[in-house]
Amino acid sequence: MTLQFSRALGALVLGVSCVVFAGCASVRPANDLFADSQDNDTTITRYQGRFSARYTQGNAEQSAVGSFLWRERGTDVQLELMSPLGQTLAVVSQSNQGATLELPNQPPRRAPEVDTLMQDALGFSLPVSGLRDWLRARPAPGTPARVARDAQSRPEIIEQNGWTVHYVAWTDDTSADAHIRRLDLDRSQGANGPLTVRLVLDQ
Image (cartoon, rainbow, N blue to C red; front, side):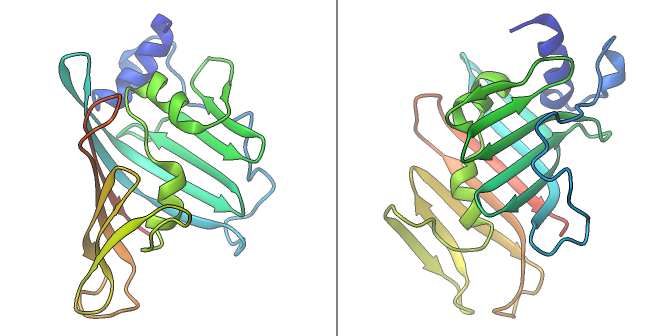
């Protein structure tokens, strides 16, 4: 990991402004899967909001805070992670051609899947493949899942693929058609240790 790479991610991990680091810049995605789309494109599913993560790196507990923008169409997913002041510090893309991670002033990094890229760069990895369905309040297809539901038949908890997804808040507490407001993801075991992620959705 280069010094500049560490500094750029430090703005995300420590939750401080990128401007304190000389030469730190916002990412302009070279692999923008949605470059030709408009904001009102109804074929794209968008989620944006704030996130926080707690994880173990080495023997120390670490944390990360910031905001995110998730865009999805078909098999294409692009996730932008931003500092608290809005600089885009990491762009993660997943398509049929594999996964790409882009960071400020660095060439794109590529791998068959996104988990390894995020783990190596950020010290934690969001379960992108599972989130495609968990953000829609349903278990991902193809693997066993345990689902506990509330009085409106909405999921309260989904346990799947080593993750426990807690649906903490909805836009309407009484409506079965409400949208997710907040979900917490916990992974207690794994090769990279425990991980807790909180997502608060603005839309």
